[in-house]
Length: 241
Image (cartoon, rainbow, N blue to C red):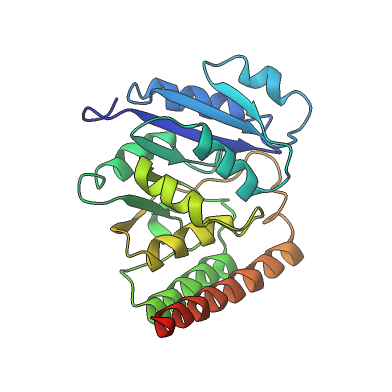
């Protein structure tokens, strides 16, 4: 528990066989985490055996996609607070304490990978990704008149149970852009949120998305389109009122 509140961590996995056990164990070692939930999203062979080495609970989600995996994890979590993190070695599980520090005043705390001092040598956060995420974040600030944002793709975050339920009720995506959809839903609903710099390390293995420049550009364009579409959608709703 953390400050009298139960806490679970959701780890979606597809191609993280070589890092999943270590990351799950490090979250467990924090002693504030009540449960680690690993969502096996058609993961690489041998992943389940790695998870079995830890105290994590594994659930299987056959609908392919980051969004589908996260939504399954949020539905499985039955705690006061829910954290989400990639189990690929890019994040420090210990940074969870940094995010939790803001929870007494917020409903949603999101990490940021674009602050240069926290980007470790060899991490997949070169100028293109760093400035691209920053630029889309600033677009959201302008279009939605929100609080300070510096990253739209960070998948390390923590939220209240109520926030998770609200996001689930409004979610539409199953793919890689789901992290951004979660952020935009929070912004649209005027959730109390803050973004905090977190350490960002080289990935263990190869990403199925950001390891390919073409897929990265495609995802970036998809994110920009999503920002614009959801903004137009909310304008229409407000005008309807």
